[in-house]
Amino acid sequence: MIDYSKAKKVLQVEHLKQYFNIGKPDEVRAVDDITFDVYQGETFGLVGESGSGKTTTGRAIIHLYEPTSGKIIFNGEDVSKLRTKAQKQKFRRDMQMIFQDPYASLNPRMKVKDIVAEGIDINHLAKNDADRTKQVEDLLETVGLNRDHSSRYPHEFSGGQRQRIGIARALAVQPEFIIADEPISALDVSIQAK
Ligand SMILES: Nc1ncnc2c1ncn2[C@@H]1O[C@H](COP(=O)(O)OP(=O)(O)OP(=O)(O)O)[C@@H](O)[C@H]1O
Ligand SMILES: [Mg+2]
Image (cartoon, rainbow, N blue to C red; front, side, top):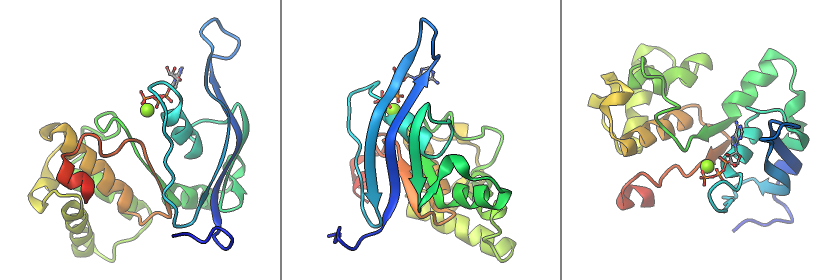
């Protein structure tokens, strides 16, 4: 259990509004003024019917969009105000998103090992090639795949397996915060439990 009187707020979403096609006939108010905090060590669930703005909220938090209004504060810093390359790179490592649609989020021309290792490479997290290979194999095992899968391409996998590749990729950089957009609904029950 989290002691909320002592726990640190990792994420603060303050009056977030995320509209699309503003001022046009097809304007969509995908997210319309939501506020919540997520504390260190907490698993926070966002529940709502289809089209209610869950994915949009996640994408706004990792700053794929500029908020229409409101603020997203991660570890005390407004994510819209990260300026230097180093700040942005640190943010992109600390916060990972596992996407709802694993096919759209995996580069079809990259082998699984290179997809999983992309963040390891960018952030120089492997000591050498052998260490990189070991890390990738361990990650694949963690998500219920195996080392033989590492030389294959995304189209050679089932939907559930692709979902696992997305999870391995997110875990690879040891992020502080993970946004999981229904990441396990495509997996079988025993793996969901894991
Ligand atoms: N880029 C976009 N441009 C225009 N409208 C969008 C865009 N992205 C999402 N929307 C709309 O915003 C609303 C919220 O979509 P969102 O994907 O956030 O819902 P969701 O809660 O994740 O739904 P589901 O449970 O089906 O995944 C929907 O009406 C959707 O059509
Ligand atoms: Mg969604």
